[in-house]
Amino acid sequence: GATIVELWVPDRQGDLDDVVLGFPASGGGDGLVGGYLSEANPYFGAVVGRVANRIAGAAFTLGGEKYSKLAANNGRNTLHGGTVGFNKRLWGNATAVSLPGGAGAGVSLSLLSPWCENTDIPAQKCRKDR
Image 1 (tube, one colour):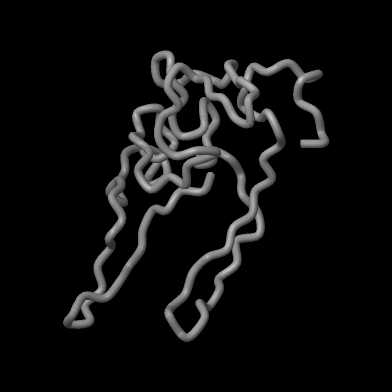
Image 2: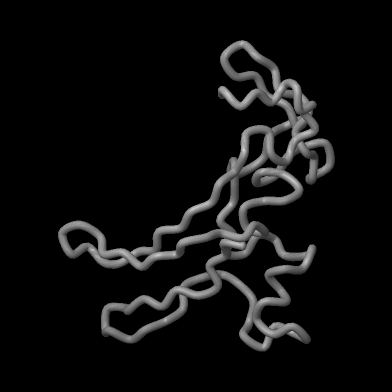
């Protein structure tokens, strides 16, 4: 999945330090990756989606249409996109990029998230024209 496990940046003196909150490299039996894949991971380093934070009651209204069958994974609520968040999905095409004006570097990732993915909405309501 798309999970940031470390990001080293220089301080004022130019010394590098990892600024990502996460698991230690020793991470247990599975090494570094094990902690991030465990059910107990509190979303350390996670690229969350489709939404960040909580959708109360696993339901919302958009454009007058009510969506009430989202995957509830936080009691009755949907947290960070549901039961299979973007942090647990296989992303493709990771590419290092330079930011405009020499502002630094970044990473470009891609993921196709189909309409109605991670919901209990019946297939006939998940039209492909949306």
